[in-house]
Length: 231
Image (cartoon, one colour):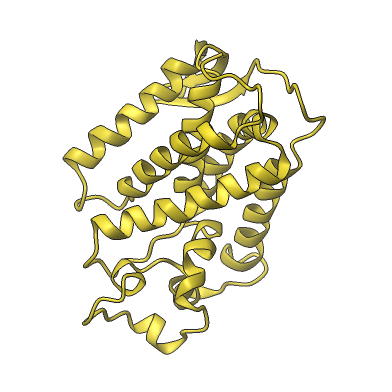
């Protein structure tokens, strides 16, 4: 519905968002080099090996995933990190990286470089576990940065709800709206979708919800001293 393009929100504490740009660069590099086929194609089995498989992550009996059984190179404890750096296609990658590009720098500014990196990774890990706990019997691979990015969205919404954001609405209209409306609409869609299509959709809505909850809680304790909420 709304595609964010740019926000009117200057950095206050850092001169450059090194972590945000670095995360985008790593995600793009991994996809282009290892997944796109332009350089090398790790194949479905390789992706599954590094993805979260809910029933396997939770150690449930009877969880069968042939690709994992054939490879098994990635320890299960690593998959809550590795899964968030893989994507299912160009649009999956571009969508996640666009949200991270627009909103990540100001969250990094509010936390500092190191704390933001830890924040991002924790949000992604907790999103993966939230998805797994809510779909424990699933052997469908989970990949993508969506859960971690959802944490960034929640933090931004709590820090800067009144900042104006340029968006492309319905694919044709360029509008300037408050972050509260843009991101609030995105959050509402996640909750609506998890109630109406969970288990019947290829989108991991519970990972988004888990990332949102993690981001909303972590920003309370990980922001710099003196950084106010709801500016």
